[in-house]
Image (cartoon, rainbow, N blue to C red; front, side, top):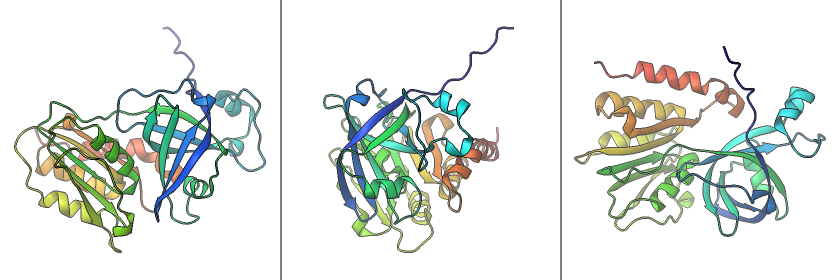
Length: 280
């Protein structure tokens, strides 16, 4: 039997901050650029993501930067922490990568970094990955998410086929967190305000009350894992939407750290899919 090739880490790109902008009280936009992104590129998805690498304080790594070497030579507590973020946009001509960060004070790692970021700061990234784009053959599109999914939803809206029929629902804390998003003619984002209610409650109510149009749907449903699970059940079991028409997954989970959620996310998703498989 042939041996499997050793698993290697994706290429790490070194970028620098070229622009920062506070879009809303809880969303900061960081534009990254620099020569380190010269070979960066995307594959045409609207949910592209990258992993941002944060070096522990007081730790430095040999150059050229190599994640496999770091994992082999450094103790685990000195490895870079990584956080996964959706690419808001990539400008091939300028070589600039835009990422929007949800910020809630000093909570978390990436959010506080983004809130303090200054032009010239450096950040290494791994990736990109991705797997969803609006299907031009679909009769209509459903886009659902909380703040964490807003960058991907906005990118999807900006890349909708001409004349697309779209129902887009985004839940945010309040009206001050709404954003201007370029949308196809006649398409509007339905902004839902949490206003102290549990995350995703308004989204579940909106989707379950929606009168689905006729025809084939293409759906993107992402955000906090609890409401995503509820909507997956609704779409798969009650609406009988085929799995291949859905891009649906939990970006994060209430009450769990990023590391804890990533450790169980794949198994959790597989279990939910098994539980919510329609009867033959």
